[in-house]
Amino acid sequence: MDSRRFAYLKALDIDVWERRNLDDPEVVAPMAVEAAPSASLAPAVEPNVTQGLDWTGLERAIKTCTLCPLHASRTQGVFGVGNRQARWMIIGEAPGAEEDRQGEPFVGRAGQLLNSMLKAIGLAREDVFIANILKSRPPNNRDPRPEEVRACIPYLFRQIELVNPRLLLCVGRIAAQTLLDTDTTIGKLRGRVHHIVSGRPMIVTYHPAYLLRSPAEKRKVWTDLVLAMNTFERLGAEARPS
Ligand code: SF4
Image 1 (cartoon, rainbow, N blue to C red):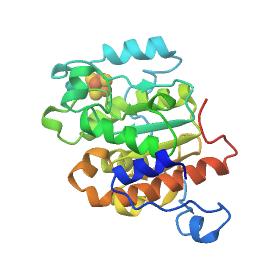
Image 2 (cartoon, rainbow, N blue to C red):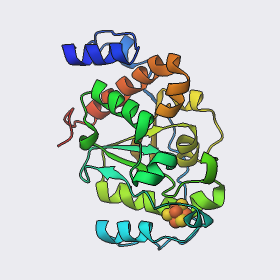
Image 3 (spheres, rainbow, N blue to C red):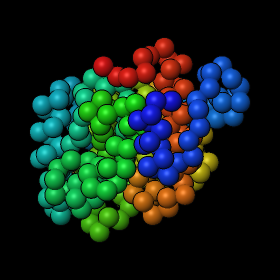
């Protein structure tokens, strides 16, 4: 482990340990549980709203979208940010107040912590593509409603198609339960490899905003990130996205 990563993990208040050979069953086997492919979350509303859209058309559609009532209270649609050819894609829940103001997902303290999590595994924010399930902020940061998710999820699926990432990292309970179409707790969704959107592997972990409230869980997140790295490397990809 290089000194920068060591320092970073210490800064995250995560126990630092040396990563061993990926073939070591003690490292990989307990966490590399393959989940049965989940039922895909079929876009139930406006299924063709994103069909054939390129990046420009998709961004325009999101910025001007009025498909659900959230458009009336948002400052702006929050499209997503990062490398549009990324091999890792980070998926969160919905814009918060600061994201709504700035028009970018994962800013503020939670965004900084996400950056730290990425840095801990050798990725910069610019290496990945970051998006949310909902593109408009729910008032008072309430949970997304099913009809809002149904209206908005085609945008995310189109983003996944366009980015074509090798791995999805899903952060937070809402995003995980939505994408896996389940009520299972995030504690039970962690620690296994899920597959969504044409069998793409997805790892679930806690949302940085939750970690700010529950810093003791950062150690679990490191375990999730190691699983994500191991899964990515098993795909035969390079450790760092181009
Ligand atoms: S949340 Fe999604 S579906 Fe609703 S208005 Fe915003 S972009 Fe449109």
